[in-house]
Image 1: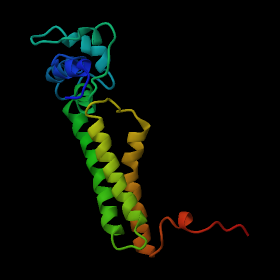
Image 2 (image 1 turned 90 degrees about the horizontal axis):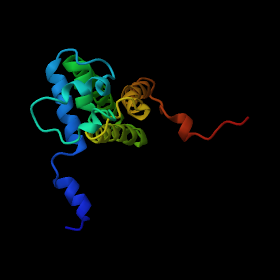
Image 3 (image 1 turned 135 degrees about the horizontal axis):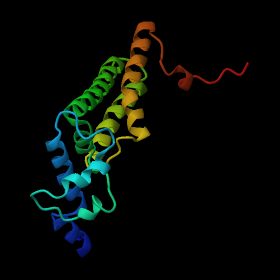
Length: 178
């Protein structure tokens, strides 16, 4: 209702550049579903899948100025096939599970800062995955740092429960300057 007419036109137009890239990525996956077209190879091989049945409205994004798929899951699927997508999904699920286990371990600890931090890792990772549905941040350092924080939080929780110490004591305690 309040959006400018250009924005309304962009949203109502079903053949945008992103849908063209998604169509081409699905065609690339369909042609080589098991191992894909090669790691980080979508922009190179995408031009082979532009001339197929079906509407593609922004072919210049594939032929003239090749772009990534603008969807981390489609990009992985087209590049590495179902094997790469399953391995990536396993890595993400393992990191989320570790962070969730850390939350459960920290639930009874005082202070509760570590539990809140572990919950923030889960929320951040889920938010990053949701944003990556419309982006291709597969090689983003922030994404892999978030993935690494899940197991790190679990290791900290185990350390604190085994030794009954604050895992982040160096943050809570004042520095010893003597």
